[in-house]
Length: 288
Image 1 (cartoon, rainbow, N blue to C red):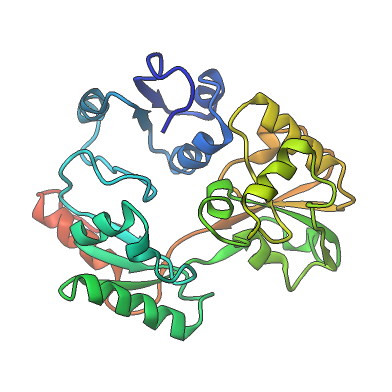
Image 2 (image 1 turned 120 degrees about the vertical axis):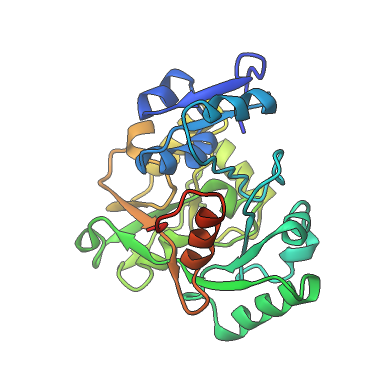
């Protein structure tokens, strides 16, 4: 999902962090791309969808189309997984294209079963059944880890969260807040000291809590984000955005990354569906 000169960005290939810098990717683009690069997988992006599909076909056995619920696949998938968030009840059918993807899916995954209440998880599963009674449902956890937990113990901590999750995603806080709320002496509220452009983000999304969304659609907004971080009185910054924030911004305070992953939280397991898919398409082996 590029921003900027779409003609120049018709087809993009990223294989290393340096490629992101060369393409002057926004923070939002980096949030989509960096986790895949960290796992050793090249990323193809752009707006010329036919060419975007043709390019990885020349070098890969499997193409992972990842839309982040911003779109439904522009190719016919052999296995379509949809993520359902129990912390956002009702979004299964209130947002487009979320409902479209749910109706198309082969498997629904209810994430965050380790942080959502059992009632919320049951409600999410019932919402899936109301749309697709035949759709298999997997319950998954979203474990969060800090690179250096000792750095936040008893400290004043500023939490920087994944931008889209906190803004138009409708969440008051994200993984970073969850990771530090029982460790920090204080979670520093960035709103009183927000610079002009960042303050405008808070006015547009008044549901946001005492966390800082990692917005950065252009150089000016990135500078404002950097200023807002540096003029806070936090002792430590916890970066829960999927990117290496310290590599993009000049942050004067020590930065600890909060990372989140996926883990099965019961039966059936996601691994079983992926293994069955690999067998069906003739690739065999375990998904790992």
